[in-house]
Image 1: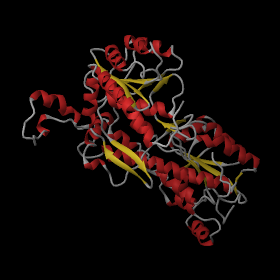
Image 2: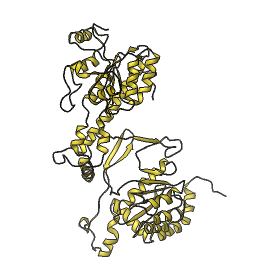
Image 3: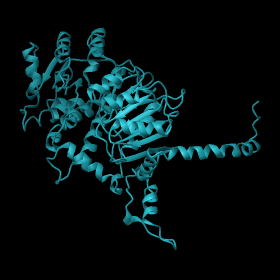
Image 4: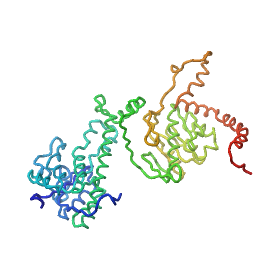
Length: 492
């Protein structure tokens, strides 16, 4: 008992680092009650039973209360505390002074405790919440904006922030992954949680609400307007991507939402650390940092082609690009451009890979193959090569969205180079006007993707080899001059 009022600990659940030096571990708080309101019911019943075995009272709402009662766990409805029933399809449950006052009251503040007693507020020691599954909802194919908006949690983040702010008196838990650790500490310390644990749970809770709000803000920023309400996410995403070539794509506040998939062996160099954020990997040996860089370069290159195309990249340098009637033909043309440097390269296609293309590219050692898709026979061929990485990246798209480059003190952003140079863009400024053939031969060299496309066409026609021969012919004449300019000893 405190101030004549019964303490109630709230846990509300929906769908590793140490704090050494951050806060003291001396102030333990006894946990005496809980509220569970769960979307993600992973481990719920077991956790609730542990709490009850420690004498912790449980409050609950809606489907969570039903689940616990069916499992034989004694619960008390939140409406018994607030004096109001759940309403508006469950939108109003815990948005009440008797909930937030119980979370925000500072226990060693006499004024706070007096106000709580006068208003009949039962103090809350713990809140356990994981928020409505907004991320999972918007990831579903064909979901509408209305569906997504309904999964924006309001009461959950409000309780998380109230509890996290008052971490010295209240514990807030935002994921079922913490249940086993909390149960162990509660049992070890006779139903109490340390200040160190509550502090750690607090900053992790704020991190979660920040992440959650970024999902909502980015989604609504990309999709929400009177004209788009009710359309599918896929349609809206395509429209947004199409618009990112305009200056409006460079928003005043840009938040990047990145989910780490795995750590990589090393970065661009062995002494650098690196990690992967999102991928469509199907199988094969673990990808390296440079594998991903080359794979993206090759993929961006083939996406510039409307016809079936293949690109081979090695250390960010094109070894060959080819087009053809089939993926196999495009690969053989790309490979024939420079068979030597193609060894150990990264291969990308802008069409689904069939068995014929798979057999062609496995005739030599290849690090990575990237394509929109792979048929079953092709996958069987590719998976037989244990050192080959296979990446499926979905539908080929032209350059769109934003490009980023990090600089000291900031990040540069620009819309991607999706320009297609047309005849109408050309202006003759010379005394002699070029012929139609000259225009056709040179116009595609003047812009980003078209410049790459022209280079690919040259390579596919076999024009790349003479250029390499010309460069090789110049090298003997350059070497003596370089030796004179550079203070390096000659090799013997």
